[in-house]
Length: 164
Image (tube, rainbow, N blue to C red; front, side):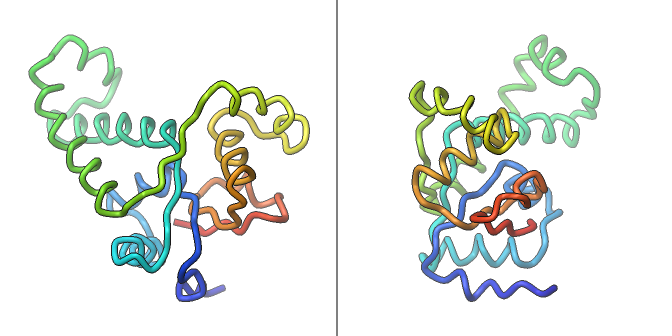
């Protein structure tokens, strides 16, 4: 089934960590490229959380360590022992943050009152961790569209998941 990105004009879309990673690694589809382009030009709004961005920045660092230094196994342990490499990887993290600013991303905070809702989400939807956080944020801000490869959201009737 073809997806028409134009129907998202002026809409808000929650962006999950995997969508950012697919985009940054060049593994995303054309719809995702178009969604980010439309966000840059102000034709639609992207929303995420501080926790999702933390995950994205960490994964970008690990992926960059693999590409630049060949670090595949135990990347965090190996990087902790080599501060010089960590300092070099900071440039890739800066690029991601610059891109986030260009997108004018609406970044929602995660605090304890948000976390207190997790048991209800777990009981109602069977989701936990970051998925529960995504769902809670989407509920709190009345968001319908989700850019994510996570099929666990497919069973939730009020969410329209967009495959990145």
